[in-house]
Amino acid sequence: MHNKYIALVLSIALVAPGFASDLGKEQRWREQVVDSIMDGEEVDVMVDGRGVFGIYTEATNDSKKGMIVVHGTGIHPDWEQVVQPIRVAMTEHGWHTLSIQMPILRNGAEFEEYVLLYPEVPPRLKAAEQFLKQKGAETLVIVAHSQGATMSSYYLSRNSNDVQGFVAIGMGATQKDSDVNSAISLKTINIPVLDLYGSDDLPGVLETAELRKQAATHNARYSQQVIQGANHFFDEMDDELIQAVADWSQQF
Image (cartoon, rainbow, N blue to C red; front, side, top):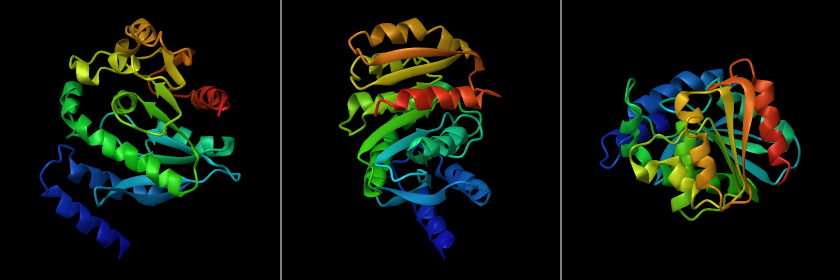
């Protein structure tokens, strides 16, 4: 019954105006992922009356802290690189985690085409905040990867929110559209920020590191950290990634 309800909701949304995200692809991701979830549970994060796919995983202790985990371009909330390791491992460090499906486009869409989706970002992240609050979280942070980090910086810089910290993993600042450029977003973000990337990251991340740093000079709680030997997806370096996020999150 539950799956039929989800399918009905999404089939209605597919014909509803105002959605740039490929909702059919979102549903296909959900169907592929749900049965393979080993840690956590499938949840509906309600956005404008529509259930958006999320994976909620409770902390191993009685925590009041919630972490929103945001994936990168075109993928899903249980992606095996960066996203799944963080959403699972951080529960052992006292965080309830919610990994949420972000707006996506068809396979092969160019990075800049995603600008069309940015108006759909704030409602999803605000709904993620509300979901975790309903679970009892009093402290909220966002940990986001790649374009998910750019989307999160867009949200944090332009919308009222209750987020108290932000980890941007592999976040570039090459967007031609200034409205969604993460360096510009950083200029108005004042909460603690960890700008985390690998020494072998993508050119768009490495080449804009100084630009991002300069954009955040007003924020004494902004820091950059480079993990030596890590690529954009932290392949075979999950432990180093988790440790960096866990160490930073101890301030909350």
